[in-house]
Length: 122
Length: 375
Image (cartoon, rainbow over all chains, first blue to last red; front, side, top):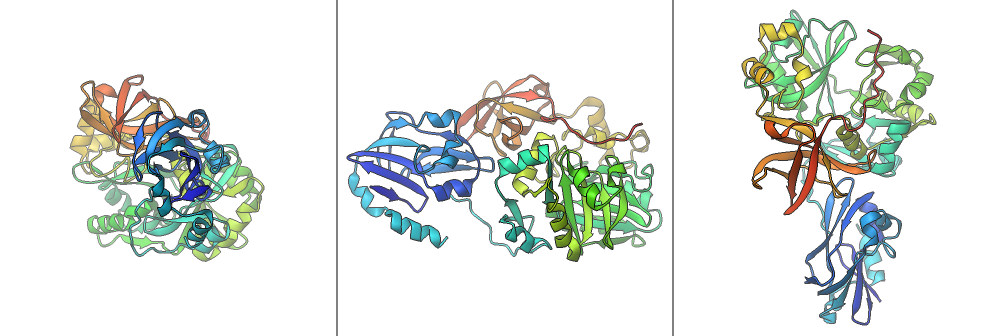
């Protein structure tokens, strides 16, 4: 099941493991992505924290973690190939995986239909 | 993700506003106008200009016409250039200086039959007009040509594309211009620009700008290019941007624009604003200087990042920085103490608490490809 934030992050949840990325809408707004900084394994993050940085040619943006937990993996592919986020934001361009510490946080997030409706109004 | 805060100001529209929107331009506020930051994407647009030709709308810039008695001598009281030495249709870069030698704006001026045509930065054009009006005698007329649009066609294939529409432009050399006719529309065209590439700047009546932009983009070499790529192109070409790399706190020598005070006569007369300080800095070197930096790694270091000395104290600032599409690496311009300005010096930069390693490098980062006349 995939959940979305109003800040255009997504988290895909499988059991207590979440995979976090930014949405296709977000990558389109950012334009050509030239650098991504993902958190290291073992880092504890709290919902709403600046967990990653994504930089386009034009600007730097913070990526907030949609849920709290402990990072188990950052997407190492993005170091050499940040453009992967432009090519496949919803899939191969994921940012990090974490173990959820409070799955109830998911209740405050949007599902895909709600997110699509949210973006349509922007 | 974070959104950048947008200031709510009354934005004006330029003659090509609808044209940009129809072509998919993403409009952003810039210099008080709605302007296109990109069409298909900054990276692709940047590389297209370096390989082919790109059309930029720079109608936000101020086009001024000065005329009247003793104009050359009066203008020389405000800028350090050799105005008197500029021949008909010759173009020169110069700086509007404050009394302390600080830079109020950078500009291009050209001798026309009936006066001096000047192009100034959009963001400060009304300040420039006020400054010129305050300091020039009443007998000098200042006409803000705000019914004119300004287009720039830049890139190695610009001469092919424009030459097809306006025969004869290829005969212009860098920093000269001429009057041309395109289907009955009078154009002022100069061989100049702000990308480091060969190219042209075209002043066209605002109500004919759409037709000309259409005709140019119908050429196979030409695509419209947004402000985003204009910024990365000028950064690679060592062309400072007013309000970022230049401001009233910087002087010509600090800004590494010594060529703007190259006229021996003007230096000997020493009668331009701030001459004493500027000439002293020319002699002894400025205390701080604008340099180019190659940044290690992939992360861009941008305007506002701190330059650190060996002890970790802030001794300077990055004034422009970003990812250089031509080089595939981050680059920056920064003001650093003279002792750190030597090419090859290793420098540390602090951006949002993270330290980046950088090396002072010769500019331009990407060689200029201007078409100069034989001397």
